[in-house]
Length: 502
Ligand SMILES: NC(=O)C1=CN([C@@H]2O[C@H](COP(=O)(O)OP(=O)(O)OC[C@H]3O[C@@H](n4cnc5c(N)ncnc54)[C@H](OP(=O)(O)O)[C@@H]3O)[C@@H](O)[C@H]2O)[C@@H](O)CC1
Ligand SMILES: Nc1ncnc2c1ncn2[C@@H]1O[C@H](COP(=O)(O)OP(=O)(O)O)[C@@H](O)[C@H]1O
Ligand SMILES: [K+]
Image (cartoon, rainbow, N blue to C red; front, side):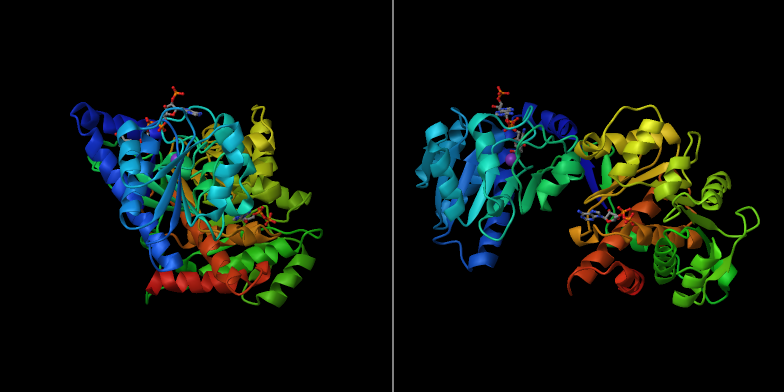
């Protein structure tokens, strides 16, 4: 499990150590961790550190100090380095160490922006030490210009590699919001604890890979604000069949999805549920859709029945339901059934407050915007996308349901907390029908769930596990070319095999 904390909590945890005079020691630990990651990356990309070209973007504070000290260590191993100072001040001791190891310095001004950009472009690695947890608002003046003008390659790409020191500059360490232009990294080396801002929204996209450097403050931190499940956490949530099982004891998933207009969604959700593993899928919906499901998945049991008359352990309702009135009614009945229920796509429009955490809403940002506005908030889609962490929490609190907000980093909030962030996915999953497969995966996990730990956040953990399985399946599929959503279940089966037996 990866635990993340707001920048403010990390600063509070550092305070007792700073008051005890350990500030320089903490900075050396941070700088050493950054140096090691940069050295490993350079060794991997060009075989050796000697002769590498390093650029440090250094702001006025300790974040710049970390980056300058790390670059000093690279200089000592034979790299060449230039510090681009984005402020009139720089950490004095770190700058002195950098200079004494042979580092060159360029003051960033209007007339040196293009020279700084050229240096970055020609370098092997850029260390972004403009702003860390002390940043307020977005990047200012020429540093902002640098971020805007940076070619796509500098923002993310092969060469140079961009390593963010603690967090990408311009990203809010607490929320992941970007107040304006910000830098993007291939790798973020973060100190003391992962910052919440690396787990959500623009911050999650800008961070790239995340590495944590232990600087000895873990004992001073309280409960995390956001967590990320790793595969061993997910494996512990899965239920494998045991010898005495039969199909009903394993768990039955009811799927009320698809309509004459959108039949494919039901086929995709069913296929994904079967690949995840469930005792049976009972499908409720119109005959033409049942026919397609039978053709693709003969094991599914289909009927045009109602929710109360159908005995299942969990529901999926909504994918491809369109304006089909019967499917809308089934979604409402599934929400009222008291059973775990995934409420997706068009069914989200039927949501009323007063739900329980066993109801899991799975909107994308557009559906989330509609949901929030129906609950009395005034927010547009860009607003949701800019600060998804705030809005996923708000939606969970307003509805009483668990809410899974899809995106590059998928966020899951239980009402009153906790919050999970999963970022295993690939942008190749941004394809029609991909969300339908997620609802099938989650439905299967809910239907077979026998882990018995129904404490706060249990459904959020299962939802986070489903998002991760979906993301990993997408990544696997993308290895051999563009992702064909109807083939995703093959990837799901192989991810499940790894999780269960790996
Ligand atoms: N504390 C510790 O023990 C440890 C901390 N560590 C490291 O320190 C980092 C935090 O360092 P920090 O507190 O010095 O803040 P930092 O992010 O460098 O920026 C502050 C400076 O920037 C300025 N500034 C602010 N906003 C701005 C903007 N929008 N645009 C431009 N300038 C802006 C602000 O000046 P202001 O304008 O507010 O007067 C101030 O001068 C943390 O992320 C980690 O890397 C590690 O070494 C481990 C030990
Ligand atoms: N840029 C992206 N990077 C990674 N995953 C993405 C991206 N965009 C969307 N996804 C994932 O793809 C799925 C899309 O779901 P959704 O929009 O509901 O699709 P549909 O309604 O067509 O089935 C979600 O699981 C989401 O997290
Ligand atoms: K930074």
